[in-house]
Image (cartoon, rainbow, N blue to C red):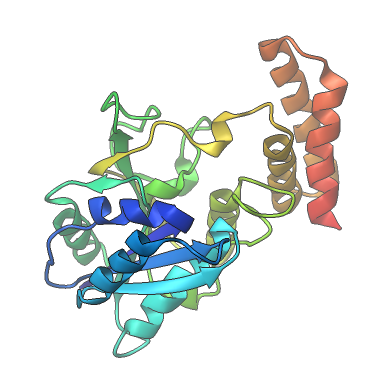
Length: 278
């Protein structure tokens, strides 16, 4: 089975990409989506691009501007275009330029999907590259995503899925994610909401793929764009009355926990609800 590792990077961060790449493996192909916000990136980046282009298992896509969801979509679209037959079965692994995959990661991913032909999306695990601990408490065993614990949230570095997910019309909503105009997070939540609405099958799977950075955007919970993103996810997922109640509950909960005023938090969350509903 073909595996596509989709690596998003921007500007001079592309110099980190070689640490993500492994020695060539059969059926593993890397799609590096390089977003550029500056004209001149330096001779070292030009030399790296030349080196990457010499590898048969690497495809570099240059994408102007910002937007992490744009980058993810460009990576998936490129992977699908590289298939000999658009209906061929293949798996995408979402990655960034600060991840490191274990020696057996791709073999484990490949084996899982071969053994579970009915699974469309498998959310796997990575550890912190500093503490080597998990970022969250995972279920003790493999479970259906629909039966996930209430505290479970999706992270991009957990996401693996078949290319048929893209062909089913599921993609990353470009209004969400780093580099987006108003909403800096929540793109993974929207991706999974759309996948569930289309009846796709997702599992949370106890397979370790490697290590990644210890922080994520969503951890900065008091930032305006993060609070707006929460509200936007509520507005996307639920009816307006339910989104209002969830926003109010979340505002009170955060205010108590962080010892802040409720109204300013609510206004930011509710802004996200109204923004996405409009």
